[in-house]
Length: 263
Image 1 (cartoon, helix red, strand yellow):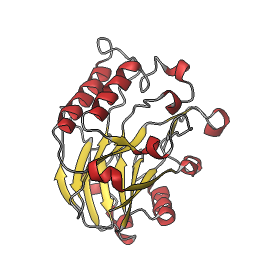
Image 2 (cartoon, rainbow, N blue to C red; image 1 turned 90 degrees about the vertical axis):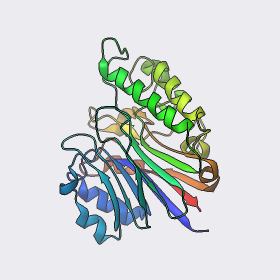
Image 3 (cartoon, rainbow, N blue to C red; image 1 turned 180 degrees about the vertical axis):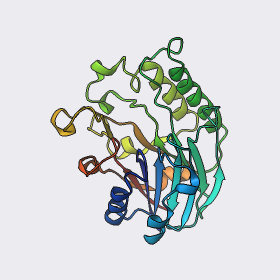
Image 4 (cartoon, rainbow, N blue to C red; image 1 turned 135 degrees about the vertical axis):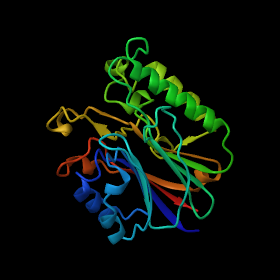
């Protein structure tokens, strides 16, 4: 069986942070990189750097200034689908199939604004509706699938720096956690982060830019996830979070996560 390393990273502008993307690819050498929040239209995507490192198979779904997702691979991939779970044509999903038939779905779930009430904050309602559409799709899936990306939800008490302090903060509210739980149950998804690093182990992937030194108070959240179903889940061998990337020059507020599979 061949080992395949798949990374997910909300890069918060791929062109602005192209230097650290290159640094990471040279150091970690993943086979497949799933990016979210690329913030670039397709024709302006920085293809050259990725191709120079052997990532010749590129599927992108871009949007100017906002959103955007991409899958870059050293192994052949075939574009499979682009779902509009936001129902407003925002570029938040792209899916491919690997040579062995496994589906790989890359998603950027909306953040949801600041107030966890759909009546006063339409963005929060859009987030919940997005998750409901994903759940309907997930329930109809057949065959091994990997679902990864920035889910913008930290579901477990140990997925945030303070469960009590964040219960009313968007990304950790009970209503969001319940929506994510329904998505997970819809296809018996295995949360690979917690499969390999069981709660209550510390496992953060995001730290706000508001803190000049994120390490001082370490107020992190686990917003980035990699799930797998069926035979894909059984093929998972290890899961890593690259926390050091948060200290690199001009970092994203998210760090890469990587799962190694033996297909």
